[in-house]
Length: 355
Image (spheres, rainbow, N blue to C red):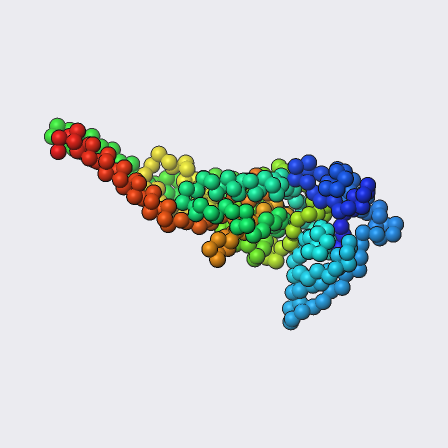
């Protein structure tokens, strides 16, 4: 296996991908270069004297050999990680590097969506997210509460297909009117038949077991128009893993998501009816294509009262999700205030009514 770090041609420091400039950037001398230019420079240097590459020893641990040792091309330190590691930062010299072999051949992604949200903005949005939670403990946002902020590229399978569908629904409509001294209710029952087709582009299913689906699906959607052809330079400065869930194993979830979307769309055509129930359905998928992509995510952990809380942000759109602790003192204080206000309001109403 081989690893590479992208070097600044001006000062020799490591280049990282800047989400703000959408270029490779050197934090020491300020040099900015296009991604393709850095890749071409890296290829030229490799072909001449291989300065940016180092021999990597691979050590197998355990029966399945899930652990590998990589050598940092900048300081020579050995870094241990699992076989799905695609990009990381050296813990000794803080140099970013990409494990090239992870993206060779069939493992090479078709697309990558570069980061649009940088680390500072991610942290600022996290704090803004917390400010809008009135039941959050007052001291939760102390700076030392944030344990880590890590930008990472998550492996996804993107499913394209067409869907043909036939639905038969049962539904009814209710009408009310008055005839003399009588209140009349009439219920009409209907059988609704719907046929049609839909097209789906880039339905995402994450290809990793390291993150919960509740997180990876909650930060969607991603904008596919922002996707670029894969280039390892985009990964510099971020973590990246290759998939450990195959496309074949991801298909059931893709089928499920597509079918749920089809049923929802067809139900919407019957929104003027009540009690719409599916009596029969037939959905067939055709012209299916699967793409492999790396999509950006900020992952944050915060520690409070001995418990770790995990938060995630879409690195392209800034969509934020996560679980926050609750201050029960604030909860009961707010409950008491609402109850008191309700009691005063009820007393005023009763007084106005002369009760």
